[in-house]
Image (tube, rainbow, N blue to C red; front, side, top):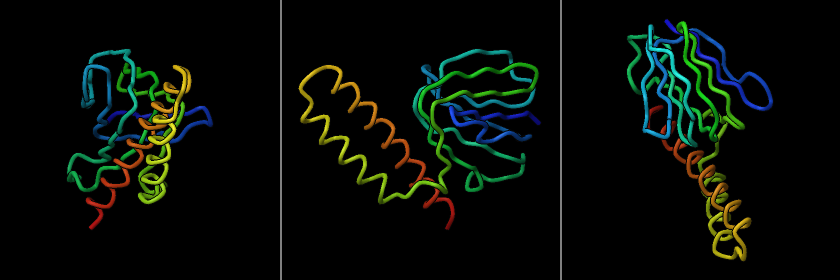
Length: 141
């Protein structure tokens, strides 16, 4: 087992012993199991998936939409520090879809680079929130 800690600006979102964690990095998704090599990496905006026990099938994974941050792995502890993390159960698919459409509209209306960057960040965040809502809908049947 590994200790997984998901920490946001608001505090600890999750801290428990788990079997596996799937993490979004700049080089792609990585799976972390017990005795993983030490690593410090950038977490990109994406989905973190958690398998609590080795015999849990994929439809029992818990999913979190996260904004970018930092990943630290050492001594069977996986610590992920991010600005925001939303558990799939806390995300409304309808609201995420509406927010994504609004972000796309802001992007199309942006007049300067700062506005474009802000709108793109909003698009990325809402797209990943929509993804975890869809994952929850598909796996909880």
